[in-house]
Length: 192
Image (cartoon, rainbow, N blue to C red):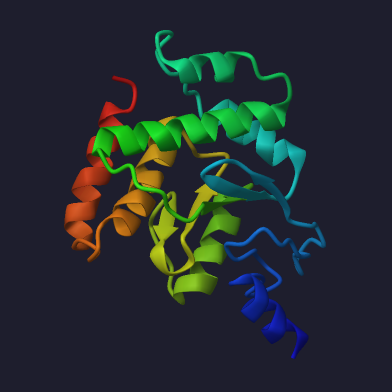
């Protein structure tokens, strides 16, 4: 009963002990007893299990706006790992909005970080009830991006953010093939 009240009060939180649902609350993973932590940015809520996962995420997502872009100052003046990741995630999110010309305020998107392909696949299996060949993914119903920090790059993150932005910008969600074309466009134009 407490779990139901908690979910009703705070949106969706812990769907299962294996992985966090898209909310700021964290819970224990029944497999490893590691606690999920959160890092909130202006546009995202990043959920992770260890500082090592954050370091891998930061190293894998190599993104820096042009020196003429104001966001460049924030990225290069960050002192802590958390500041670097906040600035980087928000800079990519805003760049994706700019590329798509879809700039309306939206609910923060959750980003779940997994330390292996196997753990990412377990999360997909739990949520979708089927296996998936994808290296990363976005699930609209949870407003959550699922990433493997050992197989990641800035374009991949931008691609998944594009799905979130597209799905929440339009009054009626576009067909998946249309959204995929737009997300691939974002991926290929991120650094331009």
